[in-house]
Amino acid sequence: MAVEVGQEAPDFELKDQHGQPVRLSSFRGAKNVVLVFYPLAFSGVCTGELCALRDEFPEISREDVELLTVSADSTFVLRKWSDTENFGFGLLSDFWPHGGVATLYGVFDEDKGVATRGTFVIDKAGVVRWKVVNPIPQARDIAEYQKAIADLD
Picture 1 (cartoon, helix red, strand yellow):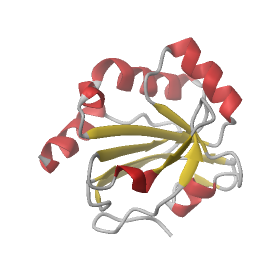
Picture 2 (picture 1 turned 30 degrees about the vertical axis):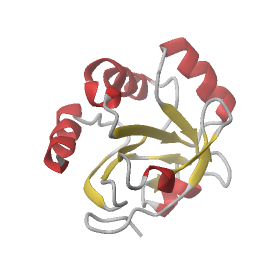
Picture 3 (picture 1 turned 90 degrees about the vertical axis):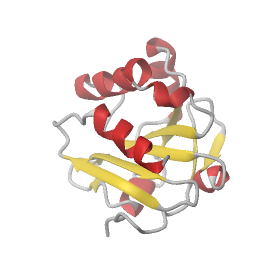
């Protein structure tokens, strides 16, 4: 079942690329969260999307915005990818149970074993205020994320 706009975002805890646990609800009351699911580290479209977030999404430097990215890759793969690309944001591992959080959000492709390209903007109260889900080969438009964050202000 997919998470829809207006619903409370399901809470989860995953480890980031450094092995540190990150809990979505820890940002409640303090930060809006941009939650970005993607299929695979090191793949072409995913690298392009996350490099664009690194380079063209200044909102990640705001004190009231947290960018969290999620894939079913292991923490070891995510650490190597983060170090290679100099990502300064959290890359969360949805490795085990495999795709469990992506499934919770309705963006896990069971046949391929990876997340689709789902993005959820979650306000400080923990409510989903905007979302987009694209097929695996189709990149998302960062300008849409920026508009969704601006609409929360």
